[in-house]
Image 1 (cartoon, rainbow, N blue to C red):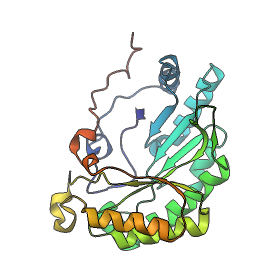
Image 2 (cartoon, rainbow, N blue to C red):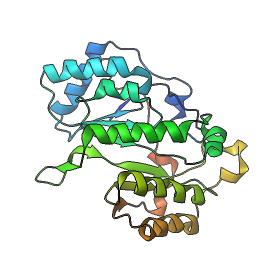
Image 3 (cartoon, helix red, strand yellow):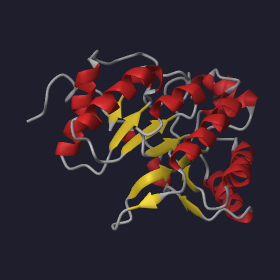
Length: 249
């Protein structure tokens, strides 16, 4: 996984706020970024997973082109908040194999309140349709590892399960019943969540199971669920810059 500093959202509950809001990171060249991609392949990882690269799309596209010209063959995963422009995503057409976007909200009001992006639902929906256009139907290798396609993620927020219903309804209507969806239960109140009492708690079993039930009720077929113990801060990575400035031996 390759994490990028900064983010174009301002989620009050962000688990990665050290890099997304506070901007921790190390400046590198496009060529060095390409080398980092190749190093992941040398370690025999299944893919290169790019997290929140949206603020650096031109540089990321250039680094991917450089890496592919120097032997990168494993799938490239674009791990995104979903808050993307269609124009920006077209820079990645043919360079990204798997899209892993969030679809956080259906409600403009929730998007504005918790992520400072009132237009998030419309922007994310258009972006996801573009991602689907680029990758088509999911394709797997002989070991059932995803090689091309898309998996959508939805983080269920406390008190917001009815909005989650609408998110799933949109997916069913616009992407079809076979769409792969990961229903995330890992919400942990962190960063600025303490300033919003209604989400300053973990998700209840009732809330999560209501969304899972709705998934099946509307005819969706493919997905992943999470265990309750996934809601803990230990899932947040340690950001120390290791592996960025020089090759790891």
